[in-house]
Length: 293
Image (cartoon, rainbow, N blue to C red; front, side, top):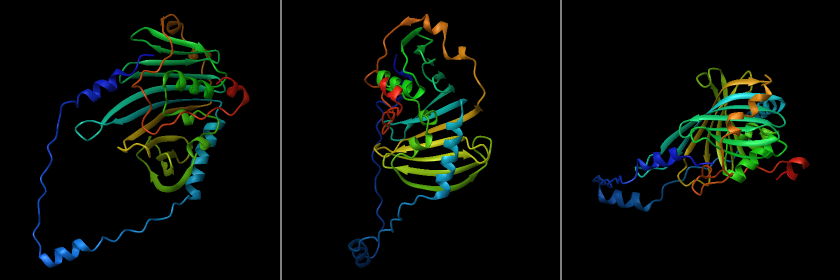
């Protein structure tokens, strides 16, 4: 599919702007005291040991269990990515997607903007990636499960959805892979229109703060920073309009209009890559799904 030109346009706004270096002001002080202060190394604060608080793990596991038990789910995902600019401060780019999933083999992701609109249909038989404005579609035979289809999209077209870990069979295993720290932050009444529990979890790859509904155990916000990203850019996922076990009509997962569009092959543009630090989706564990790789 065609790559996201919106990001390229956003980054271009910063080209050619150069900031001058600021001058450093010097503060006078008695010479002897200044020499002593400079010679004495500053005391390093103690580094606290990494902790994994049971309360934080229980909250994340409860959310995982709620999602894993769902036969179907629908939600709206609003994602804000930060990208570097020559000004220094990052540029924020936001997308919004309507997501519908039915286990084991149905998925719909419709992203109207910002940037070029896109639609993805997976009905267990075929997977279609459709660009409505350009009237272009890529179609391929589908792997047998949602997880295998998501991996196919990543491998074939560099398509990565930041809500992928919510759709797998065991969200906790995906979120807590390589877990090194987890702690409870507190409650919030201002995120997602409900009371949420805030937790933080960290691995060697990623640091995440997650807001999870105190009553319904559904995630409402995730903020992530990737360890391998030298700029430590932040990515935020807001989740709303949750529907759990409301069976969607099967016709949602295909589109005659998309199927009739001009065909192109699945392909990954050279500059369309996942956010820094994101690694490919783990391989499906089932024998059938593994066979489809």
